[in-house]
Image 1 (cartoon, helix red, strand yellow):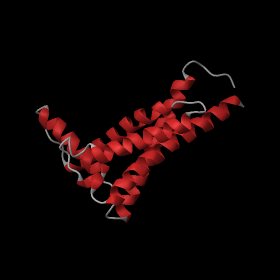
Image 2: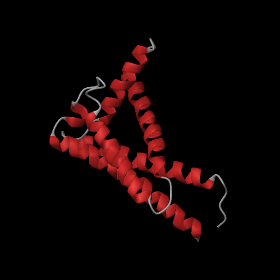
Image 3: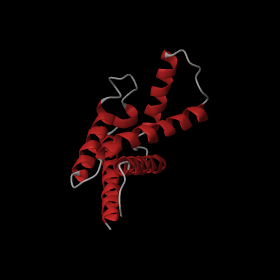
Length: 153
């Protein structure tokens, strides 16, 4: 199969989106199953409310806020995970990006004024936060590697 110049960009973006979707699905399923689940959606809604308040923009109702947060999470996490790229090192990059995002999700909300509870409520919550972001990075890497194998055929 012949590839075009835009193929690596497309591969990276689709792989990143796959990682973001996996992360979001795990978060949304777990929050229904365990009280210790990370609530990154709550952090996102708090962050969006703060940004809107700083811009003197109107505050959306709860359903609109939630939907905007979910869309923003998919977009931003998808772009972040697209940094996995392609090649043999995709697995390492996926793991490193996931661990970094998970650690940031545990360590940064408090200093940013978003509260510690949603991602750092219990040791299990913190562990799940890091694990699930790592899973997202590994899914992005797996999709990228599968894409590369398929392109070689």
